[in-house]
Image (cartoon, rainbow, N blue to C red; front, side, top):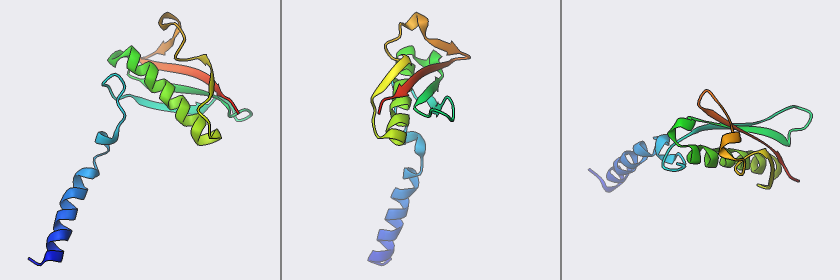
Length: 111
């Protein structure tokens, strides 16, 4: 086998495991959460909700994952992670909005 062929084969072997996106997930409290953030209305896209699940995996992890989704939304859309939370990370645990094992935060991206 030529040196070039050996390098190509080695590169292919290294690249295949890199295709596994599960390894790229961000963990919160040691858990992976599904999450999304979206504008509440078309009129004011600064106001958004961030939803993550499953909360049953870890309430503390879910809170941090929802905070992350909100920050990611504001950074992608407004270039800032500054958020005024209506329901957010500082909301007392007993007042959080949890429905069907999903936690929902609501906030507004600050300019």
